[in-house]
Image 1: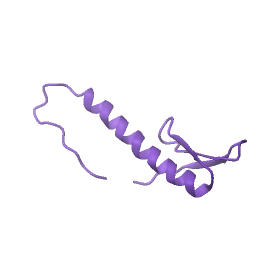
Image 2: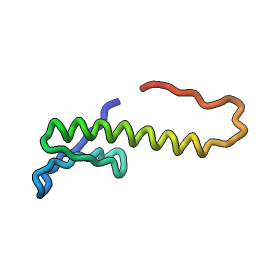
Image 3: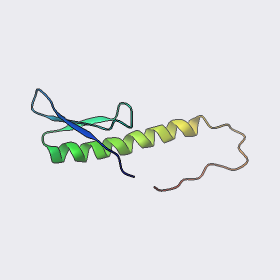
Image 4: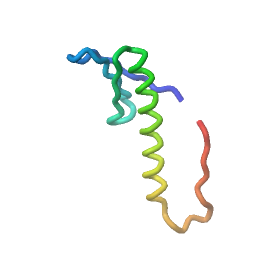
Length: 71
């Protein structure tokens, strides 16, 4: 998958990276490379957490159990 991210210079010299498509998905780094690496990890963690929330809220009487797919 491909996501757009924004990079902003923080007052403390760090670079803040945010993924606007994923509410609250923000990270930072000492330089642009570190900020981009960190936001990639944050995006993966955000998506995993959302998937876990969705699984918990599935109805218990599904005809077929949920399956996993890689994207």
